[in-house]
Image (tube, helix red, strand yellow):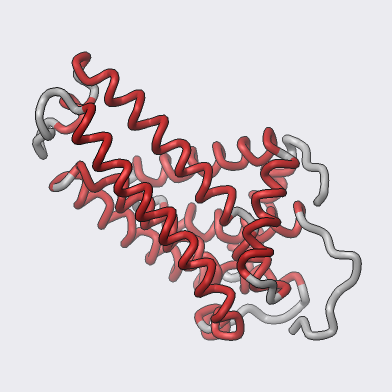
Length: 249
């Protein structure tokens, strides 16, 4: 573990931007994927708002794995190799067992999050299920203040669990071919050792995602690849190894 400062997340973003500019075509491909995810989330928000938290957690699950291709681009640039879209699309196949187990862990968290979201709606929402046209007005109705507080608290707990488990685990598996449990534990330890910096990094991620959503999702064309590349540098900045392995490629 490496002690981190509040300036580190900004440095990761700057490094991520350089990676994006070095391979913009690859970045835009993944940006389109993130935009499609945002479009699905918006569609669910308009038609079935009670499932928004479930779909959002699903995006938190799928997003890091889409970003794995971006990690590979940053990894290849760091090693002096030429980034390739084909290589980024298949980088997971050498780590299938570890990735599958980590997927299982995150799916369990996602399912628990989704179920908790539905329970909160059922127990605390006092004015009936919100309509498509008035969802925000219904949710923030003064009669539903208890619902809003509980919904945010429950969502925050699960978001922290997912974030802590995934923040460096996926790039770590890609880089070191580490088993999923060790990667997840290392990720949680990184957050525990640098809570202020990692919460600041999580806030930056949230703000950038909010800006992307504010542009009808089009901002994900840039924000998606930027955060993907920056997350690789977050891993490299937070986890140091005493010596490189001979099997790295």
